[in-house]
Image (cartoon, helix red, strand yellow):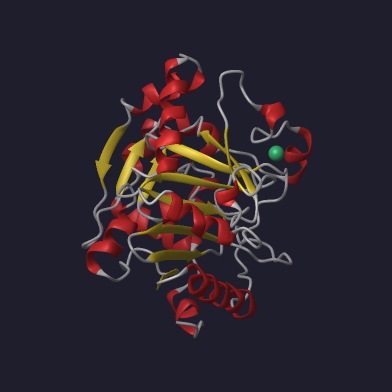
Length: 317
Ligand SMILES: [Zn+2]
């Protein structure tokens, strides 16, 4: 196991032994119901996880954010939460990081273990200036897949820059890419980039993201994300398997229409972030667990993604 993985997994074991919120939340994971949602040759899954209700329903409006205590800043931590500082200025050998990060056990986990890697600065969730660090984390945590939710694409702390890390092998899309050496049809907006080194990966990912900002027009449906200057509406997952791998999932909507459906029987409360875009649907009510079919899940992912044509129009390969 890598040195960093060993450090943070020790922290995880210690925090769970304190018998506080983390011990409770991770114990709930053992009773999560799981259902196969296979779509064609893509093995999507559905989790019924009542412990995720706060993340699914998170109100991330500017007004709410302005009046709440940020839970990634030291003042917002629970008393038993542990922090492992990593990155620039912490150890001389981490000088190649651009920022300093507080690594913590994610208090509302989807997987065990599940970590947040948050900037020690309270700064907006924006990948620009941090992507280099995301790639560094994949080399320092080769057992882990690191992911990023854009501020309007599933992040429940859009006001505080953070990544998340889970063990590689948990996300169907990542496993599919490693096995088949191509993307599944599941998500029309995905792009996979593989590179030998961080510099290459950085340059190619940013060229792609810049082109997305330039050519993908804001859509006109009621749930569409209104234009904003940085247009950073995407999820990213990265992992290292001897080569650097990144999948960018471009978005047009934050939540699908069924989230807002007026008729209760048509409503499904799902807020897609990187995990859902990669084939793991998470719902927090029994009704939604029964209602979400493979076709419906595929429809939700298609609805919140840019179209296959828009993806094709981005000429950067
Ligand atoms: Zn904060």
